[in-house]
Structures are given as C-alpha cells and as structure tokens.
Length: 279
Image 1 (spheres, rainbow, N blue to C red):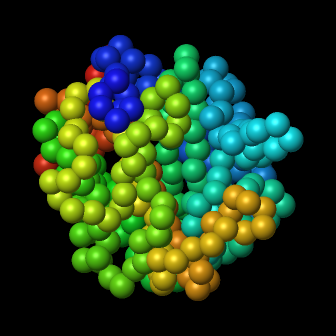
Image 2 (image 1 turned 120 degrees about the vertical axis):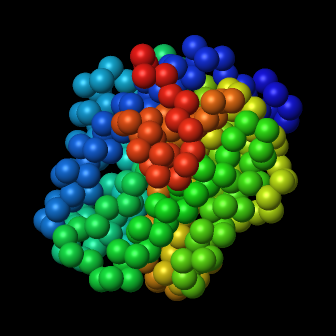
C-alpha cells in the first residue's frame, strides 16, 4: 500500500492485471464486431459473457454492488445508448442506425481486475456525434500520455480536461471519475476528468489507474434513472465514454486493456511503451 489506501503492485501482480486486461480487450473486440442495427444490448452482453468465460475469467460487473436483498448490477457489460452516459443495463433495447453505444466491461483473473470501455457507432451517425466519439477517445489518450512516474494524478486530469475543452463546447459528466484498480475494481485514488496539473497523488511504479473520460454534447449535469443504475445527461444530449486500465514505469506507459498494450497510440503521441510482451 502507498498512502491514503492506494495499492501499489509488484511487477508480477501487474502481469496478472495484464492478463485480466487482455480478457477485457478481447471481450470488447467481440462486442464491437457484434454491434449493428437490430441487435439488442442483451445480445451484446451475452457475447461479452461468453468471451470472458472462454478465457477462464470471471466478470467484475455481474452482481456488482450486491447486498442482502439487493441483487446488484445484472449484466457483465454496461451498455449505455445515446443520452445514457454510463451504467446502462443491457436488455431488450434494440440498436438502430445512427445510435451510439458505450460498452463498459471488466474481468477478474486470479483476483486481479481489468476495466475498459469503448464507444461504438451503429452504422452511419451524425457528424457531431462522430466528432464527440473521436474527441472523447482523444481525451483518454491525452490523459494517458500526461501520466508518468514522478508526475501526479492531476496531470492526467488536467490533460483530459484541456483536450475536451479545446475540441468543442462539450460537457464533462459531473461527479464521475476514473479510479485506482487492482485487487478490487474501484480503489483509491479517484482520477477526475477535470483538474489542476501538479496536484493529487504522485504516480509511482506499480500504481494502476482506470482512466475514463465521460463527455456529452451538452450539459455536464446528469441524473440516475429509477433503475438505480443508468446515468443519463440531464438535457438529453448524447454522450461518449472511453476507458483504459494503465500503468507507468520509469521506461514509459503500459495500457493493460489494449490488445497491443497501447504501443501504436503511444508511439503517435511520442510516449515510450513499457509493456512486457512476454505477458
């Protein structure tokens, strides 16, 4: 542990997290290939469930938040469509041409967690929606690129905010953040999507963060529906959500939930790749 309950991993533990991250990456890849007009979000959930099970892992989303008398989250993915920002429950909703759906997915391998999200367009979408999706993903990678050993969590937050603000008049979903991850899916520290550079916990080797901007075409204000899970934009504006689990060493960054470890995107950004290809 490292101050304020922050969990620091050994290289061997990070390697186990990479295994969990790869399961998540494969599940999201399978779901992306399934997204099409006429497909239900329950069908997407089934694809993710089958992929996670086929890789010998378990879901960290299914039954999340369960308490006596409360069953917890009912899916292995969050499927959030259009104005649903995060935590959409998969079910009978049918995807239609022009929709946008964010898929958030996680997995556990030997007690270690991975967590990642992508936003997928359904067929042809309006130009402003495509720009929202692209700019939110760009903000994710800006945040990852701003991290590094010796830097601070606030540097990640500031880079995300700066990227979003420079791209257009978007809302950054109020009250929702990234987080630490390891032996639990949600750990300290929070990773806000707005913030000041040079502030927050210091990034050290073995710190693993889930970085996840959530951005809307309108207001930053959100509300939770009566299902107690689905978060929607207050003004009905559409949203995008991207997430990766990432760690940094003295040699660079390693994106544990990217199939290539983040190598390609990091190279584009001039960030050294520090992945262990043996894992």
